Amino acid sequence: MLDYDLHCHSSISDGTLAPAEVVNRAAERGVKVLALTDHDDLDGLDEARAAAAQRGMIFINGVEISVSWRIHTLHVVGLGIDPAYPPLAEGLRGVRSGRGNRAEKMAEALAKVGIGGVLQGAYRYAGNPNMIGRAHFARYLVEAGHFRDVRSVFNRYLAKGKPGYVPHQWAALADAVGWIRGSGGVAVLAHPGRYMCGNKSMGKQTMREMLAEFFACGGQAIEVVSGSHTAEQYAEFARYAAEFDLLCSCGSDFHGPGESHRDLGRLPDFPPGCRPVWEAKPLKPIFENIPSSPAHNAVAGHAEEGN
Ligand code: AMP
Ligand code: MN
Ligand code: MN
Ligand code: MN
Image (cartoon, rainbow, N blue to C red; front, side):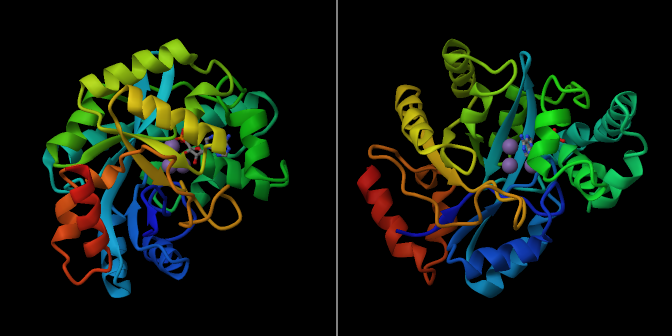
C-alpha cells in the first residue's frame, strides 16, 4: 500500500513549516504521494513541487478553499489543480481579501473580553500576512501565556459562537467547486465529520442536503480518512460516499509538529468498498506520466480494478 497524504498545510497558510520542510518531513515519514493543500493560497506549490522532485516523491498541486454554505463554513480541497488557471487564482484572491479586516474585528472582539493588543502578535505568526487566520491568533495567545495550547484557545475564544469568533462570508460552494473543476482538478469535501460536531453543527439531514448539492455542482470526493475523523467516522463517511457516489480521499490535515492531531502520512487504510480519489480521471495522468515512479505499477493496478 502506497503512502498517500492528500491534505496538509505550510506556512503559506496556517501551517508552521515552510513548504519544502513539509515535503521533507513527509518524505522522511515514508509518504510517496503528497498534496500540499494550503488554505485559499497557491504560493507554496512551486517550492513544494521542487522539493518533492528532489525526494522522488509524487506531488499533487492542491488547495483548501474556505466556503460559506447556509450558516456553515465548509472546506473544499482541490487536487490536481492548475495554479495558472485565471478564475481559480482570481477567485482565491477574492477569498483572501477579507482576512485582514476580519482579523481586525477579531482583535476588537477579543479586546472587549479583556484580551487586548493581539493583532500585531497574531501577524507575527502569519508567514503570509494575506492569510492571517484564527490559528495565528491562537498561537500568539499561547505564547502570551493566556492558554496552555492552541486547542484550548479555540475551545474558549475562537470556535464558532465564542467571543473572538467573527462570522465571515467565504466563497460560494458552486464557485469553489467550479474553480477547481475548471482548472482540471478534483473537488473533495474536506473533513465532513467536523461539520457535524460543535456549536450549531449540521445534523444528518443537512449533511445529506449538502452532499447532494456538492455532487450536483461537480464535487467528486469526500475525505473519509482524515486527521479530524475518529475511526467510527471513517466508516460513517465511507457509507455517505457510497450513498452519494463519491470517491474517497485521505489526508492528515497536518499543520505542524506538536500541534496537529496527526503527523504526515501513515494514515489507516480506507474501509472496504471505498473507491480512492486517485482513480478520478484528472489524477490518473499524474501517476501514469511518471513511469519510473514507484507508484506507477500500483496505480495502473488500481485503474484496472476500477474498470
Ligand atoms: P480560519 O480559516 O482563519 O477560520 O481558520 C481555520 C483554521 O483554524 C483551521 O484550518 C484549523 O487550522 C484551525 N482550527 C479550527 N478549529 C480548530 C480547533 N478546534 N482546534 C485547533 N485548530 C482549529
Ligand atoms: Mn488550518
Ligand atoms: Mn479544513
Ligand atoms: Mn486543512
